[in-house]
Image 1: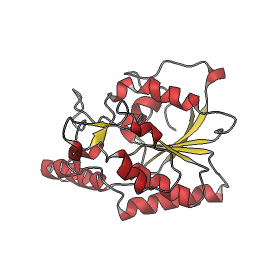
Image 2: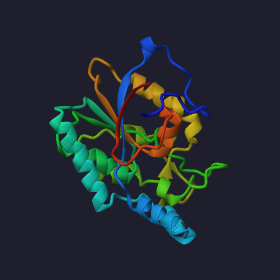
Image 3: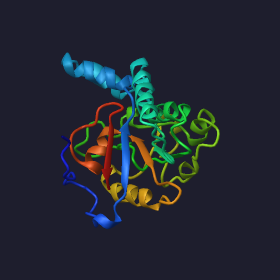
Image 4: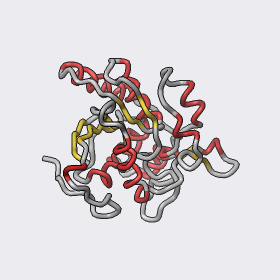
Amino acid sequence: QRRKTMASAGAPSPVPSTLRRRIAFTRHGEAAHNVLIACGRETASPALVAEGRQLLDPVLTPDGLEQATRLAHELVALRRRFDVVVTSPLQRALQTAETLYEHKLAARVVVTALHTENGMPVEGDDVAGQPCQRGGPALDLQLTSPIGWDFKRLADRAEWTCDAGKPAHGWYHPLPVDQRLGLFRDFLYSLDPATDKDVLVVGHSGFYLKFLGGDKMGNCELLEKEV
């Protein structure tokens, strides 16, 4: 059983139960950096771990695509369809969301960087600021995604930015995760419950650990929780 308590550090303030929304969450499928980092840790190879972290905006592996497809089939079997899927702009999340979208599991898709992991260096987080936590330019992402997906939020440099003069080094949200927890919950609450009643978030394990608490989510694990 997943623990119900919120992570203490940086967790959003408690919300009265009458105001909470029940939201579905899933983590992206396995991505290329996940494999390298896991292998590096298993074999005590810092070089492999570093190689994984240096991959800019890594894509899903074949196993990751299979995980996303399996999740889609499970949701289809349950006759589940979401009014909106909220996905991060990193390729591994976009590809997972696209797999669900192709199976007609989402009426629409909104892209926001609010629930990405730390794209800038943060003290105490050795993965923060690494290329694997950064994505591509908003226009490029939009052009390679299904027509009609909502990328408007990424047009704001307060949400999706890059190091000065270094766009090739990757794009990220300029605030650390701890400062985005309440902002992301506010965003979820801003979705109209009349038209966006059933919501699925596609995101990342590091953000979820602080936002939801509990244990680290597996790739394409599905969790529903009141937030």
